[in-house]
Image (tube, rainbow, N blue to C red; front, side):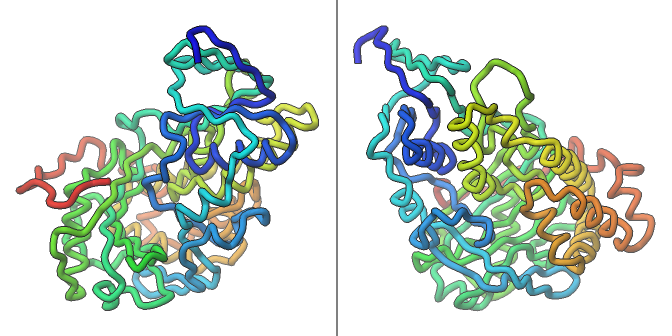
Length: 398
């Protein structure tokens, strides 16, 4: 491409993570001309992506699933079995399920992204009737964050904690070595489908997040409590991103943010891929019928759901470990519809309002409810200083 070259299409998608690739794929399948841009369009995505099986769109083939857990476990003060199938997505399977054979795929970096134009570093200008910005999230800073450190362990080594077909969504058992005066975190552990299990200590809602060395220390403590010893050569991954990215405003002449950049990051769980995949066809249908995709993606009901979930995020970020256990214990005794309303439903505002109220009402002791709603200890962990690591981390963060 020469400097100043101009290309045109119906839709331009900037960023080819799972969300962007799915959007470009479905736009292409709808018969529209697509330009897709990414610095490394052939690269498989580094993070591990998971979701509830029923969240996935029907057009996605079974090959996109790497492993499936029929009834994952949550440990609060007691064990809860969630009778709802859960899965880890296969990176290669998901990539292969989203071919872009009839799209113009450009390996490049955007320096300017506008409502109808995208300019690349080499001077190429791309024009489209609609531009979608799917490049992910802006820098974290001191925003409310999801932080996680995951270690990949062979299934045989992981067997004392995670057997075949099992998975831990939230493990709040007091095994991570954190004291009562430290910010809380829980363990997430699921089989990947490639012969390994990821053990991932996770923190949700802290301003600025929890440092990787602290999360790693807590993960190793949990494994040691179950007799699992590592060599130090196990691969690992890091996650550290904001949870409070808002939905886009209506009627603003700018590119359409989609995926985690467009408010589809769940404020209370840190999940975004399944919701984004499920909403891809909503955006495509809006384009085909001449409607505003932002209006189609974010009706008032969905915006109300986001607003209520944000209140849940603020509550998460100020609880102690004991309070977190009590709150999740109350939540996972709620109805199936109520749990789905918080965990995944895009616009079920009535059920979400009910489950949030009931969760607070059933959290005990009574005085802890004041923390949940922000009447007390609103900024409990703000400015908390974690201890520095005693030694460098021994495994590479991928």
